[in-house]
Length: 162
Image (cartoon, rainbow, N blue to C red; front, side):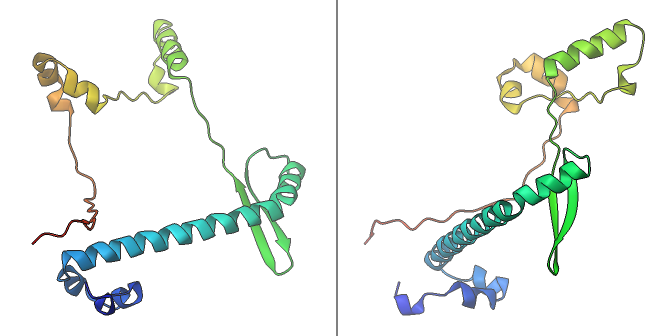
């Protein structure tokens, strides 16, 4: 492809989707590569900036959170004309085996575990596919398959065909 005919990402932003779809596969592949590289660079810049902001405000936000008697959560403080909103989310993980034992204990004592915990049963697709057909058929009515968003990755081949 002639480099002067190459469409830039800036030009792409001004094109209708139908016009983009009408481009050659080579043009689309080059644009995908350009977009991926621009996204990578933007992500790297964003991560770098986020790291600098965290470094600037980590001590102050920790002190403010401690003064507020909080281990986690959102706190606010001002730095000149800027209000800094610092969030330290709480992430809780539960030991599934211990929870299952506790659910059984609650049930054995005559209480309803549903009043204390949410119980979710999951079947990994890999395990489902490995089951014998008579077991799979028993579970099929409880199974719904949905599709995700389709994606396409184009890669220019380096081979020249004649």
